[in-house]
Image (tube, rainbow, N blue to C red; front, top):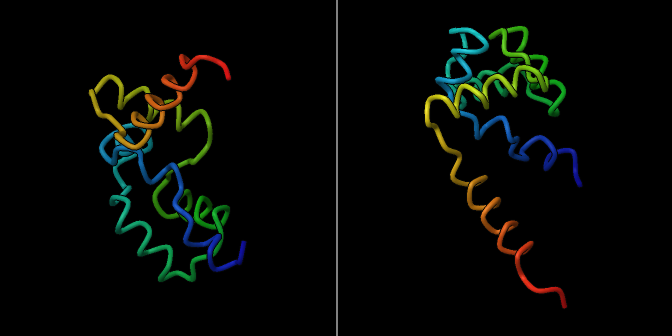
Length: 100
């Protein structure tokens, strides 16, 4: 994978509900689009650089404990991630399919 492609790869964080992120991590998070734009304007980089930027600029800790908190808040708020829901449905269907 090229360095350029690695920088443009989507991150699962981008699927999380912005309101839930703000509730768990603080109100400074401006939303995915603006945060990514700010990161690129600041020089961009790889996923680790992006996580560090989000922490320093917005106070968003992209760590398992924080992400679990965001996921929990999304569940409480009834927010869904359609891409993940579809993936889970497909995996469940495959697991129920007869073995070949």
